[in-house]
Length: 395
Image 1 (cartoon, rainbow, N blue to C red):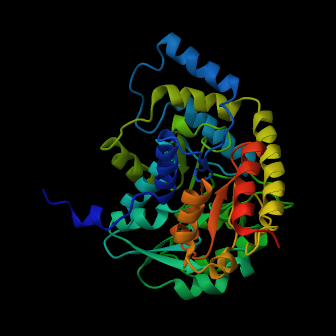
Image 2 (cartoon, rainbow, N blue to C red):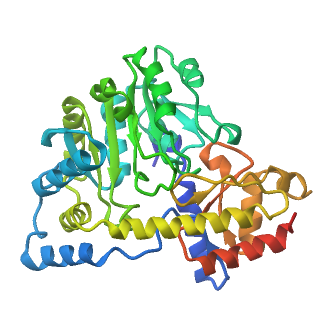
Image 3 (cartoon, one colour):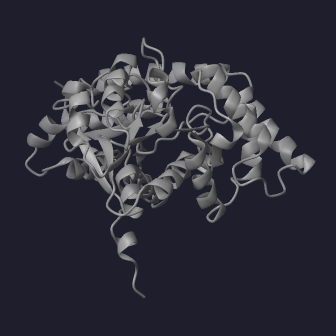
Protein backbone atom coordinates (compact mmCIF):
# COMPACT_ATOMS: atom_id res chain seq x y z
CA UNK A 1 0.00 0.00 0.00
CA UNK A 2 1.40 3.38 -1.02
CA UNK A 3 -0.06 6.55 0.44
CA UNK A 4 -0.35 9.69 -1.64
CA UNK A 5 2.25 12.43 -1.60
CA UNK A 6 -0.59 14.73 -0.62
CA UNK A 7 -1.32 13.00 2.68
CA UNK A 8 2.37 12.47 3.40
CA UNK A 9 2.96 16.21 3.02
CA UNK A 10 0.79 17.17 5.99
CA UNK A 11 1.02 16.67 9.74
CA UNK A 12 -1.65 15.63 12.23
CA UNK A 13 -3.11 18.54 14.17
CA UNK A 14 -0.60 19.38 16.96
CA UNK A 15 -3.33 20.60 19.31
CA UNK A 16 -5.28 17.37 18.94
CA UNK A 17 -2.06 15.38 19.32
CA UNK A 18 -1.22 17.12 22.61
CA UNK A 19 -4.75 16.60 23.93
CA UNK A 20 -4.68 12.93 22.94
CA UNK A 21 -1.31 12.39 24.59
CA UNK A 22 -2.52 14.03 27.80
CA UNK A 23 -5.63 11.84 27.80
CA UNK A 24 -3.60 8.68 27.20
CA UNK A 25 -1.26 9.57 30.06
CA UNK A 26 -4.23 10.15 32.39
CA UNK A 27 -5.74 6.83 31.35
CA UNK A 28 -2.40 5.19 32.18
CA UNK A 29 -2.58 6.63 35.69
CA UNK A 30 -0.49 9.79 35.35
CA UNK A 31 -1.63 13.07 36.90
CA UNK A 32 -1.80 15.33 33.85
CA UNK A 33 -3.57 18.68 33.50
CA UNK A 34 -4.51 19.31 29.88
CA UNK A 35 -4.38 22.94 28.76
CA UNK A 36 -3.89 22.16 25.09
CA UNK A 37 -7.41 22.01 23.68
CA UNK A 38 -9.34 25.07 22.49
CA UNK A 39 -12.62 23.90 23.94
CA UNK A 40 -14.82 25.79 26.45
CA UNK A 41 -15.35 23.86 29.67
CA UNK A 42 -18.92 25.17 29.99
CA UNK A 43 -21.86 22.94 29.17
CA UNK A 44 -24.03 23.83 26.19
CA UNK A 45 -26.82 26.14 27.49
CA UNK A 46 -30.06 24.39 28.41
CA UNK A 47 -32.30 26.11 25.86
CA UNK A 48 -30.03 24.85 23.08
CA UNK A 49 -30.08 21.28 24.38
CA UNK A 50 -33.87 21.46 24.76
CA UNK A 51 -34.24 22.47 21.10
CA UNK A 52 -32.17 19.44 20.08
CA UNK A 53 -34.27 17.07 22.21
CA UNK A 54 -37.48 18.47 20.73
CA UNK A 55 -36.12 18.01 17.21
CA UNK A 56 -35.34 14.37 17.99
CA UNK A 57 -38.69 13.69 19.63
CA UNK A 58 -40.66 15.28 16.81
CA UNK A 59 -38.77 13.35 14.15
CA UNK A 60 -37.50 16.54 12.52
CA UNK A 61 -33.90 15.50 13.08
CA UNK A 62 -34.26 12.01 11.64
CA UNK A 63 -33.89 12.81 7.94
CA UNK A 64 -31.41 14.29 5.52
CA UNK A 65 -31.59 18.05 5.17
CA UNK A 66 -30.57 20.25 2.28
CA UNK A 67 -26.82 20.03 1.68
CA UNK A 68 -26.29 23.69 2.61
CA UNK A 69 -28.45 23.58 5.74
CA UNK A 70 -32.12 23.76 6.67
CA UNK A 71 -33.87 26.97 5.68
CA UNK A 72 -34.69 27.95 9.28
CA UNK A 73 -31.01 27.85 10.21
CA UNK A 74 -29.94 29.79 7.14
CA UNK A 75 -32.53 32.42 8.01
CA UNK A 76 -31.15 32.58 11.56
CA UNK A 77 -27.66 33.07 10.13
CA UNK A 78 -28.90 35.83 7.81
CA UNK A 79 -30.54 37.54 10.79
CA UNK A 80 -27.37 37.17 12.84
CA UNK A 81 -25.29 38.88 10.14
CA UNK A 82 -27.88 41.65 9.78
CA UNK A 83 -28.26 42.20 13.51
CA UNK A 84 -24.68 41.89 14.72
CA UNK A 85 -22.48 42.70 11.74
CA UNK A 86 -24.59 44.89 9.45
CA UNK A 87 -23.87 42.40 6.65
CA UNK A 88 -26.61 41.32 4.29
CA UNK A 89 -26.60 37.97 2.49
CA UNK A 90 -29.18 36.10 0.45
CA UNK A 91 -29.96 32.49 1.32
CA UNK A 92 -27.91 31.19 -1.61
CA UNK A 93 -24.88 33.07 -0.26
CA UNK A 94 -24.80 30.96 2.92
CA UNK A 95 -23.47 27.45 3.49
CA UNK A 96 -23.80 25.49 6.74
CA UNK A 97 -21.01 22.95 7.27
CA UNK A 98 -19.67 20.40 9.73
CA UNK A 99 -17.83 23.01 11.78
CA UNK A 100 -15.99 26.11 10.60
CA UNK A 101 -13.05 23.89 9.64
CA UNK A 102 -15.08 22.20 6.90
CA UNK A 103 -16.28 25.57 5.64
CA UNK A 104 -12.65 26.71 5.30
CA UNK A 105 -11.61 23.47 3.64
CA UNK A 106 -14.51 23.73 1.18
CA UNK A 107 -13.34 27.27 0.38
CA UNK A 108 -9.77 26.16 -0.27
CA UNK A 109 -10.90 23.28 -2.49
CA UNK A 110 -13.11 25.62 -4.49
CA UNK A 111 -10.55 28.39 -4.90
CA UNK A 112 -6.97 27.12 -4.79
CA UNK A 113 -5.21 25.57 -7.78
CA UNK A 114 -1.84 23.78 -7.62
CA UNK A 115 0.85 26.33 -6.81
CA UNK A 116 -1.50 29.14 -5.78
CA UNK A 117 -0.23 31.08 -2.78
CA UNK A 118 -2.23 31.65 0.40
CA UNK A 119 -1.00 34.33 2.80
CA UNK A 120 -1.31 33.32 6.45
CA UNK A 121 -0.33 35.73 9.25
CA UNK A 122 1.84 33.92 11.81
CA UNK A 123 1.28 32.88 14.51
CA UNK A 124 -1.66 31.06 12.97
CA UNK A 125 -4.18 28.37 13.75
CA UNK A 126 -2.31 25.12 13.28
CA UNK A 127 -4.56 23.75 10.52
CA UNK A 128 -4.26 26.61 8.03
CA UNK A 129 -0.92 25.70 6.39
CA UNK A 130 -1.66 21.98 6.17
CA UNK A 131 -5.11 22.58 4.73
CA UNK A 132 -3.56 24.79 2.04
CA UNK A 133 -0.90 22.16 1.32
CA UNK A 134 -3.53 19.41 1.15
CA UNK A 135 -5.36 21.16 -1.71
CA UNK A 136 -2.12 21.80 -3.62
CA UNK A 137 -1.55 25.41 -2.61
CA UNK A 138 1.52 27.03 -1.10
CA UNK A 139 1.17 28.58 2.36
CA UNK A 140 2.99 31.91 2.67
CA UNK A 141 3.34 32.87 6.34
CA UNK A 142 3.95 36.48 7.39
CA UNK A 143 5.66 36.62 10.76
CA UNK A 144 4.22 39.06 13.29
CA UNK A 145 5.88 39.01 16.69
CA UNK A 146 4.91 40.26 20.10
CA UNK A 147 6.36 43.71 19.37
CA UNK A 148 3.46 44.25 16.92
CA UNK A 149 0.97 42.30 19.02
CA UNK A 150 1.13 39.36 16.61
CA UNK A 151 -0.65 41.35 13.85
CA UNK A 152 0.68 41.94 10.34
CA UNK A 153 1.09 45.44 8.93
CA UNK A 154 -0.12 46.73 5.56
CA UNK A 155 3.51 46.95 4.46
CA UNK A 156 4.10 43.30 5.27
CA UNK A 157 0.96 42.28 3.41
CA UNK A 158 1.86 44.31 0.33
CA UNK A 159 5.37 42.83 0.24
CA UNK A 160 4.03 39.26 0.46
CA UNK A 161 1.58 39.52 -2.44
CA UNK A 162 2.76 38.09 -5.77
CA UNK A 163 1.06 37.25 -9.04
CA UNK A 164 0.38 33.77 -7.59
CA UNK A 165 -1.36 35.07 -4.46
CA UNK A 166 -4.97 33.86 -4.40
CA UNK A 167 -6.11 34.19 -0.80
CA UNK A 168 -5.45 35.93 2.53
CA UNK A 169 -6.68 34.28 5.74
CA UNK A 170 -7.47 36.65 8.62
CA UNK A 171 -8.36 35.17 12.02
CA UNK A 172 -9.50 37.83 14.48
CA UNK A 173 -9.60 37.46 17.45
CA UNK A 174 -6.75 35.07 16.92
CA UNK A 175 -6.01 31.52 17.88
CA UNK A 176 -3.37 31.26 19.40
CA UNK A 177 -2.71 34.85 20.55
CA UNK A 178 -6.11 36.27 21.49
CA UNK A 179 -5.40 39.58 19.72
CA UNK A 180 -7.80 41.16 17.23
CA UNK A 181 -7.55 43.69 14.43
CA UNK A 182 -9.40 46.92 15.18
CA UNK A 183 -11.07 49.11 12.56
CA UNK A 184 -8.02 51.21 11.72
CA UNK A 185 -5.76 48.18 11.40
CA UNK A 186 -8.20 46.47 9.07
CA UNK A 187 -8.58 49.63 6.98
CA UNK A 188 -4.83 49.56 6.40
CA UNK A 189 -4.98 45.96 5.18
CA UNK A 190 -8.04 46.74 3.06
CA UNK A 191 -6.22 49.56 1.25
CA UNK A 192 -3.57 47.06 0.16
CA UNK A 193 -6.12 44.45 -0.91
CA UNK A 194 -8.03 46.96 -3.01
CA UNK A 195 -4.89 47.34 -5.12
CA UNK A 196 -4.74 43.57 -5.74
CA UNK A 197 -8.13 42.47 -7.11
CA UNK A 198 -6.96 38.88 -7.66
CA UNK A 199 -6.63 38.28 -3.91
CA UNK A 200 -9.64 36.83 -2.10
CA UNK A 201 -10.11 36.88 1.68
CA UNK A 202 -11.18 34.28 4.22
CA UNK A 203 -12.32 36.10 7.36
CA UNK A 204 -12.28 33.52 10.15
CA UNK A 205 -14.51 35.12 12.79
CA UNK A 206 -15.06 32.06 15.00
CA UNK A 207 -13.95 33.96 18.16
CA UNK A 208 -16.01 37.05 17.30
CA UNK A 209 -18.03 37.03 20.53
CA UNK A 210 -15.20 36.11 22.89
CA UNK A 211 -13.86 39.65 22.98
CA UNK A 212 -13.34 42.18 25.76
CA UNK A 213 -11.34 44.87 23.96
CA UNK A 214 -12.45 48.50 24.15
CA UNK A 215 -13.10 48.57 20.40
CA UNK A 216 -16.03 46.61 18.94
CA UNK A 217 -15.58 43.63 16.66
CA UNK A 218 -15.32 44.36 12.93
CA UNK A 219 -14.06 42.39 9.96
CA UNK A 220 -12.66 43.40 6.58
CA UNK A 221 -16.06 43.55 4.88
CA UNK A 222 -17.31 45.95 7.56
CA UNK A 223 -14.45 48.40 6.99
CA UNK A 224 -14.32 47.94 3.21
CA UNK A 225 -17.62 46.88 1.61
CA UNK A 226 -15.86 46.80 -1.77
CA UNK A 227 -14.16 43.61 -0.60
CA UNK A 228 -17.49 41.80 -0.14
CA UNK A 229 -17.41 40.34 -3.64
CA UNK A 230 -14.19 38.46 -2.86
CA UNK A 231 -14.52 37.74 0.85
CA UNK A 232 -15.95 34.68 2.56
CA UNK A 233 -16.86 35.19 6.22
CA UNK A 234 -16.54 31.98 8.25
CA UNK A 235 -18.08 31.54 11.68
CA UNK A 236 -19.87 28.95 13.80
CA UNK A 237 -21.48 28.12 17.11
CA UNK A 238 -18.65 26.06 18.63
CA UNK A 239 -16.80 28.63 20.72
CA UNK A 240 -19.37 31.24 21.70
CA UNK A 241 -22.06 28.74 22.72
CA UNK A 242 -19.85 25.92 24.09
CA UNK A 243 -20.94 23.66 21.23
CA UNK A 244 -17.64 22.25 19.95
CA UNK A 245 -18.98 18.70 19.74
CA UNK A 246 -22.11 19.70 17.85
CA UNK A 247 -19.99 20.56 14.77
CA UNK A 248 -21.84 23.43 13.13
CA UNK A 249 -20.04 26.15 11.21
CA UNK A 250 -21.16 28.41 8.41
CA UNK A 251 -19.81 30.58 5.63
CA UNK A 252 -21.23 33.58 3.79
CA UNK A 253 -19.91 35.23 0.68
CA UNK A 254 -20.19 35.63 -3.09
CA UNK A 255 -22.88 33.40 -4.56
CA UNK A 256 -20.58 31.81 -7.16
CA UNK A 257 -18.03 30.77 -4.55
CA UNK A 258 -20.55 29.61 -1.95
CA UNK A 259 -22.35 27.48 -4.53
CA UNK A 260 -19.03 25.91 -5.53
CA UNK A 261 -18.37 25.13 -1.86
CA UNK A 262 -21.85 23.62 -1.62
CA UNK A 263 -21.10 21.35 -4.58
CA UNK A 264 -17.92 20.13 -2.90
CA UNK A 265 -19.79 19.48 0.35
CA UNK A 266 -22.46 17.53 -1.54
CA UNK A 267 -19.76 15.04 -2.52
CA UNK A 268 -18.16 14.77 0.93
CA UNK A 269 -20.41 14.96 4.00
CA UNK A 270 -23.64 16.17 2.38
CA UNK A 271 -25.66 17.99 5.04
CA UNK A 272 -24.37 18.73 8.55
CA UNK A 273 -25.99 16.65 11.29
CA UNK A 274 -29.68 17.55 11.42
CA UNK A 275 -30.08 17.61 15.20
CA UNK A 276 -27.10 19.94 15.53
CA UNK A 277 -28.67 22.30 13.03
CA UNK A 278 -31.81 22.60 15.15
CA UNK A 279 -29.63 23.25 18.20
CA UNK A 280 -27.77 25.95 16.28
CA UNK A 281 -31.05 27.71 15.48
CA UNK A 282 -31.74 27.99 19.20
CA UNK A 283 -28.20 29.25 19.80
CA UNK A 284 -28.43 32.03 17.23
CA UNK A 285 -32.01 33.11 17.94
CA UNK A 286 -32.23 32.56 21.70
CA UNK A 287 -31.20 34.59 24.73
CA UNK A 288 -27.58 35.72 24.33
CA UNK A 289 -26.89 36.29 28.02
CA UNK A 290 -25.26 32.85 28.15
CA UNK A 291 -22.53 34.15 25.83
CA UNK A 292 -21.99 37.27 27.91
CA UNK A 293 -21.67 35.20 31.08
CA UNK A 294 -19.07 32.91 29.52
CA UNK A 295 -17.08 35.84 28.14
CA UNK A 296 -17.02 37.46 31.55
CA UNK A 297 -15.58 34.30 33.04
CA UNK A 298 -13.00 33.97 30.26
CA UNK A 299 -11.86 37.54 30.92
CA UNK A 300 -11.50 36.79 34.64
CA UNK A 301 -9.40 33.73 33.87
CA UNK A 302 -7.35 35.65 31.31
CA UNK A 303 -6.41 38.33 33.83
CA UNK A 304 -5.46 35.76 36.44
CA UNK A 305 -3.45 33.56 34.08
CA UNK A 306 -1.51 36.45 32.51
CA UNK A 307 -0.62 37.80 35.96
CA UNK A 308 0.65 34.43 37.10
CA UNK A 309 2.54 33.70 33.88
CA UNK A 310 4.41 36.99 34.21
CA UNK A 311 5.62 35.93 37.64
CA UNK A 312 7.41 32.90 36.15
CA UNK A 313 11.13 33.18 35.55
CA UNK A 314 11.90 33.46 31.85
CA UNK A 315 8.27 33.94 30.76
CA UNK A 316 6.56 37.03 29.31
CA UNK A 317 2.83 37.12 28.56
CA UNK A 318 0.90 39.97 26.94
CA UNK A 319 -2.65 40.93 27.84
CA UNK A 320 -4.87 39.81 24.97
CA UNK A 321 -8.15 41.10 23.54
CA UNK A 322 -10.22 37.93 23.52
CA UNK A 323 -10.46 34.18 22.77
CA UNK A 324 -9.35 31.87 25.59
CA UNK A 325 -5.62 31.49 25.06
CA UNK A 326 -2.42 32.98 26.35
CA UNK A 327 0.66 32.81 24.13
CA UNK A 328 3.62 33.58 26.38
CA UNK A 329 7.19 34.05 25.21
CA UNK A 330 9.34 31.39 26.89
CA UNK A 331 12.63 32.08 25.07
CA UNK A 332 14.41 33.14 28.25
CA UNK A 333 13.20 30.06 30.11
CA UNK A 334 14.48 27.86 27.27
CA UNK A 335 17.86 29.64 27.20
CA UNK A 336 18.28 29.20 30.96
CA UNK A 337 18.11 25.38 30.85
CA UNK A 338 20.94 23.26 29.48
CA UNK A 339 18.70 20.31 28.64
CA UNK A 340 16.05 22.29 26.70
CA UNK A 341 16.84 23.75 23.29
CA UNK A 342 13.47 24.83 21.87
CA UNK A 343 9.77 25.21 22.57
CA UNK A 344 9.01 21.63 21.54
CA UNK A 345 11.40 20.29 24.15
CA UNK A 346 10.02 22.77 26.69
CA UNK A 347 6.46 21.55 26.08
CA UNK A 348 7.69 17.96 26.41
CA UNK A 349 9.36 18.88 29.72
CA UNK A 350 6.17 20.49 30.99
CA UNK A 351 4.17 17.40 30.05
CA UNK A 352 6.49 14.65 31.24
CA UNK A 353 8.08 16.32 34.27
CA UNK A 354 5.34 18.70 35.43
CA UNK A 355 2.19 16.95 34.22
CA UNK A 356 0.95 20.01 32.29
CA UNK A 357 0.01 19.70 28.61
CA UNK A 358 0.67 22.85 26.54
CA UNK A 359 1.18 23.29 22.79
CA UNK A 360 4.60 24.50 21.52
CA UNK A 361 4.54 27.81 19.69
CA UNK A 362 6.33 26.39 16.66
CA UNK A 363 3.11 24.49 15.86
CA UNK A 364 1.57 27.93 15.29
CA UNK A 365 4.49 29.25 13.30
CA UNK A 366 6.39 31.10 16.04
CA UNK A 367 9.21 29.41 17.92
CA UNK A 368 10.03 30.12 21.54
CA UNK A 369 6.41 30.38 22.69
CA UNK A 370 3.78 28.03 24.09
CA UNK A 371 0.00 28.22 23.92
CA UNK A 372 -1.98 27.79 27.10
CA UNK A 373 -5.75 27.42 26.93
CA UNK A 374 -7.63 28.86 29.91
CA UNK A 375 -10.90 27.26 28.85
CA UNK A 376 -11.06 25.47 32.18
CA UNK A 377 -11.81 26.42 35.78
CA UNK A 378 -9.56 28.61 37.90
CA UNK A 379 -8.73 25.85 40.39
CA UNK A 380 -7.39 23.66 37.59
CA UNK A 381 -5.49 26.59 36.08
CA UNK A 382 -3.91 27.38 39.44
CA UNK A 383 -2.83 23.78 39.94
CA UNK A 384 -1.18 23.82 36.52
CA UNK A 385 0.50 27.17 37.13
CA UNK A 386 1.72 26.00 40.54
CA UNK A 387 3.51 23.15 38.76
CA UNK A 388 5.06 25.50 36.20
CA UNK A 389 6.13 27.85 38.98
CA UNK A 390 7.81 24.98 40.82
CA UNK A 391 9.68 24.00 37.67
CA UNK A 392 10.74 27.46 36.50
CA UNK A 393 10.82 29.51 39.68
CA UNK A 394 9.65 33.10 40.04
CA UNK A 395 11.22 36.40 39.00
